[in-house]
Image (tube, rainbow, N blue to C red; front, side, top):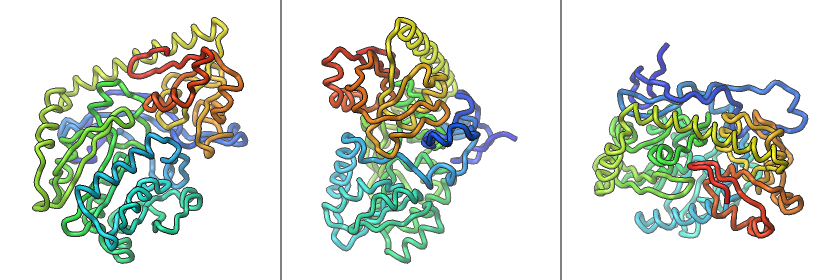
Length: 407
């Protein structure tokens, strides 16, 4: 049976890159779990000839990925500053008062809502991760533990009222049931309110060869054109678009109901740039797949050479994207002794699929390995600043994407 597009319903979705069967990117393992069977799922991405949407061919049930979650926004200083800046931008553009409500879908540890609280509104976080709800309780922020959909949106509206602002940062790509999700946004959004999305931008992924952005949580790889089609089919329209450098490239999109808000020139300009790049042509994605295979060959060859010369190589950063890279390149403890990560939730665990131990960053300075493979390369500047002493002692970082370099 041909896969169907989750935006337009077409059955003309053509696979263009197969990253193999991989474990779920955020399902880190305890030592006791290493000997047990580990579920793996096909990781194949395709292009819709009907609306140009790029999406996974097969979906893993969201409950298997998001009800116990180990990624926390505040672990990155860069991301924390960015989310506070987002709250400043939104409240300046759409003034809100102390009685207004801001709802953040996929609120994680509440970092963005803490930014909004500085401006006075009520704040509600929606997130299915029970472990995060227990860890990050804030008396100034209400929390709804569950998935956001049309049903939970009605419950949220009835309990908390409608929202002047609804946000979804790095959450919108996770949604397989897009029509139902947008119905939920319509339900909870106040008249004249705004829905703000931040998501990895397909154009940046293509330009940078960032194949490690692909993992099971990311059902969609958004460009603006199919996003506009989705919202127009559901009584809403995109009114403003901004490109951001965060996470190696994101799109910030402002959406309102039809007839609310003026459409900014940035929308047309972005659409024209996408057309010029060829995001509506399958040949663009075939070239991306060829480049991905070249990255695998080059990095595998480089790591083998360094190890053969007697160098010790470890990793830095245990994000979900890093696990795509480890899985596709078939790297494990034989190639990387360990991976350092600042998140205490991941320390003491093992990476999914590849089973590399995760340790605290202090171990890098204690042991001074010759090379560190930077798996969190989208935060390269922040990591290298944190590890200035390691570099001063002669340690070197391997940045794998977009072009392999040793610094």
